[in-house]
Amino acid sequence: MDKDLYLLITGALLRQRREAAQLTLADVSQRSGVTIAHLSRIENGLADPRLSTIQRVLEAMGGTLADLKTPRVATVPVDAVLERRVVGQKRVDRAGLGPSDASSRVDRKERAGIDVTVERSAMRSS
Image (cartoon, rainbow, N blue to C red; front, side, top):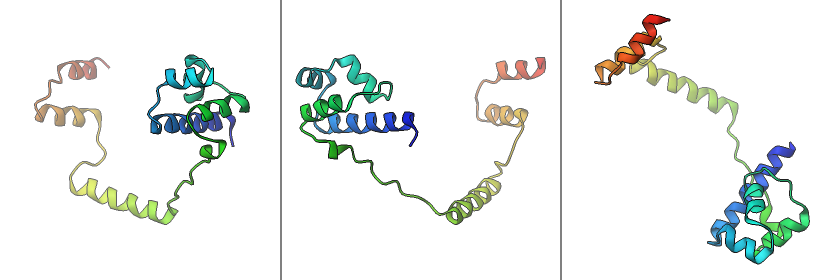
């Protein structure tokens, strides 16, 4: 697994655990001895904490390392994605919203009552 992705996942799981325990960063900081700033960086995937730091943070929240188990991600078969794509394209075509150019989009906005003066002048100048 990519290190950046690992840090993001770990941080997100820690944040979820903290929020589930209804604790603030200040609460966890006080209980664990880890600064609020460092906790924030960890939760946002911007810091690579030591294992001992993660353990202290989890213990402060009443958890263990087992709480960081990454949930299994559901996958969708390629055939289902392709089928959804075809169905979606048919809906777009029926609604008359197929591919359009900039002037068509501006025309639709104007018909909807949106002021398009700036967009029209930008289109003329380009």
